[in-house]
Image 1: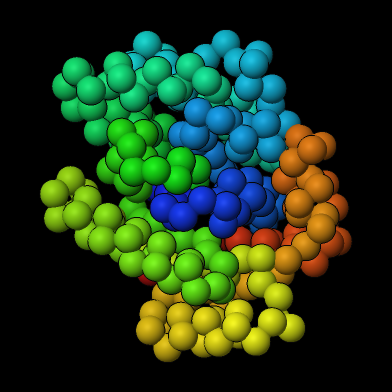
Image 2: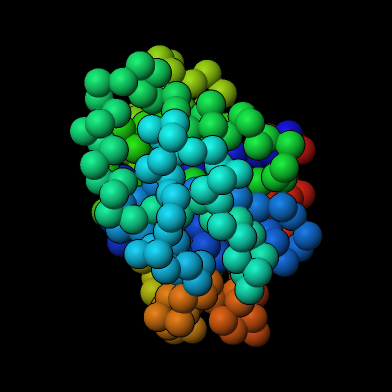
Length: 256
């Protein structure tokens, strides 16, 4: 049975897509079967996995409208070692079209149930806003991985996300919970970041992953080459940290 995780944070610019593609590549590197679902109309996770979103014949849009299955729409990226259910600008239209449909928040969950046995992990890259697309991701997931910077405003954004998860848990998906917080773009030289990191550990305990992703130029450069940093430069500090995070997630997964 696949573990289905949303990578979500209602604050923009925290590295959700960078986390999703590098975690997918890291999990593939340690021998896991991975499906990455891009739920953002910008299609950054699709492009960052080496797939041209403009050339997609079928996408997550078709899956949500039930005109294609994940097996039909998924694209295997051999360089990265995982399968991508890609997105492009068509997906923005799905917001409007889904409103009038039955089971509109369960479309992704039902589609994933068909391919459950084919993957060990499903990672869903959600848009920053709480939309019908994000809701589909949260209804399909077993839990949420929250990438966050150790800065003051990030703590405020976390409060909003926790409240959203509680609402979805209460009304739509009883399985949903926070799997863990991943500290990203971390610079140990900055005192404030160390302080916020300690606050997170004090408040959330073992919900804070041991892995820490450092601020890293090679991770930032990788998307312009259409690759996750883990594939683009495996020896970079950020890439090594993501592979360590993947190992930690595999180790924790049986208890989730």
